[in-house]
Image (cartoon, rainbow, N blue to C red):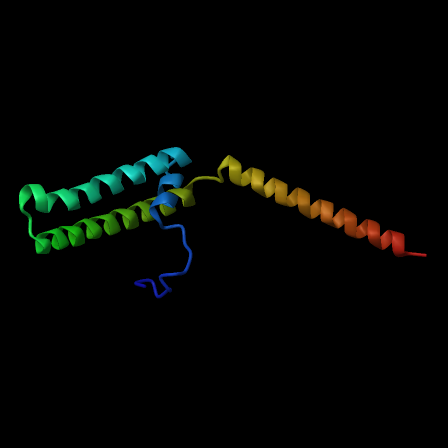
Length: 120
């Protein structure tokens, strides 16, 4: 919303996209996200029980952690965007472009073959 877009607009600034751009594989991304989720949810459940932390302090802690998470993801996105501008295309992107060009050439070949078969 700070960028003037709907919060439901798809983008690549989510944690799993940032981790993918950083080079983590699918299973590694899953493990990282699950470990963080388990740690923070366990801490939020156990803090009031073991440490006697009030609900207000738990909420303030949540807001602070969310602010840190938001800042870190934005910083990571900016870093990734600036580094991708300087780097050439990754091999997978080049392969995708080559496949697309092959499909386009195949389509043009089919189109020209049909036009030749229609001529008297």
